[in-house]
Amino acid sequence: MRIGELARRTGLSASRIRFYEASGLIAARRLGNGYRDYPEQAVRALEIITCGQQAGFSLEEMGRLTGASAMGAERHERLLASLKGKVAEIEAMQQRLAQNRAQLLAIISGIEGKPQGMDCDENAQRLIADWQRGEGGVSKA
Image (cartoon, rainbow, N blue to C red; front, side, top):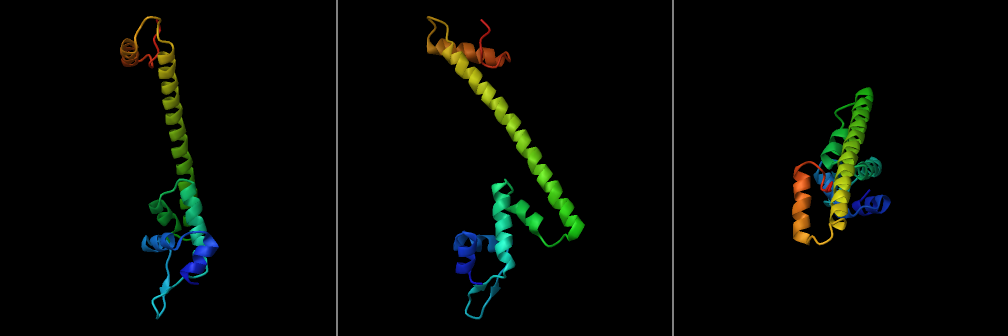
């Protein structure tokens, strides 16, 4: 099938398809007139690549997962390990984001809880000092 048909069937732009081809993720046969001729399995391959990217896999990771070097059980194990690894990455990111959120909320609380009569610069210095003492940006005073 030609690139226009593949683009229509996958919802991807022709330039995106050419990019995936140049990256080695899919292959096309060149016809005598120079047109690309994609096999039917290119539709499924592009669907898998798109889903993988939406799940957070890089193109390099997708190339390793979709490569033809592994067969059967080996491919299954590699896919399963990659998926579990991606879940672990997401969980670590969620933990970092939760810590960042808590720190930002503490700073907001420190700014909003500025002692009466203290100007903003003094309050900022107080918050920085608290932060450096490991109090998370919130004064205990």
